[in-house]
Length: 228
Image 1 (cartoon, rainbow, N blue to C red):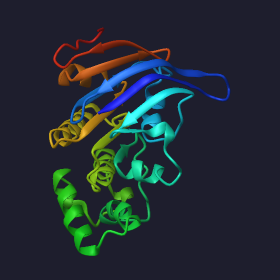
Image 2: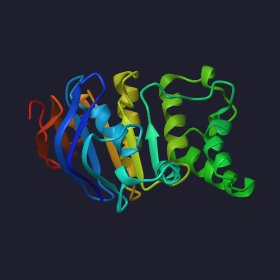
Image 3: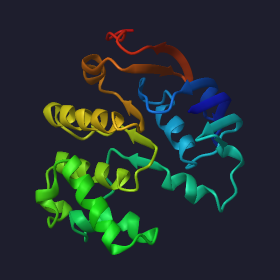
């Protein structure tokens, strides 16, 4: 369960990014965040993995109020929270396999366990045949699949995707969304922020609409239509 209780976020330049957000996202669910640029989607995502701190309110993730975490506990939260970005953030000097392995190496996972996990996620994301390629040799969609594989190789219970299809063509975007949906069916809680309303129309999952830092609509699964 993810829960926001009266959460507001104001940046140092006095921009009020979120205002009095109250929200519950059940474990194992798939949720879209939509809204125009500046509506607060990315800020909400950043609050969930403690890239930013709320100005007011409580944020609960995996039964912990993450606003109260010590510096020691923040890395533990991030190990339990996979994040996929619009711009991939791959290590250009490392192969696909090495990019995915990097997160496990930091955690001290054994080589044998690394091999098992990496092979599994590369098969799940359909890029095992690209394991020895480098990012510059991959298409945008392939790079994003590597990013997804890296985000889930530690088997996090929560996966956050901030505009994951922002740099991709429509067909590739649909493939990435289907992949995220497939991951959600394994029991992972998936939250996707997007400008891509056509994709939201096709998938008809729960959709939270933000405008001006406020939730203006919370549309249940199956009920979304563009313009909701």
